[in-house]
Length: 67
Image (cartoon, rainbow, N blue to C red; front, top):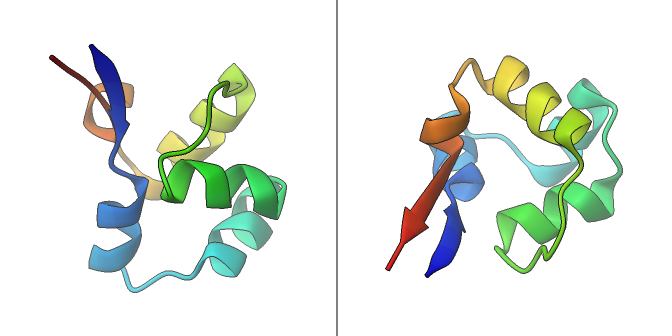
């Protein structure tokens, strides 16, 4: 089981760059990059909340459990 992050898809649909998301959410650029590349091993709940609010999505839309 792995957790898939759909940040890159949402960013692509809205034509956003990593730097745009980092600036607008106040998150560290490295945090956004790790989620974008799906290499993050830990994510702060505050970061998830900021991303969901910024992208106007639910947590279940941003993250998915895949067998």
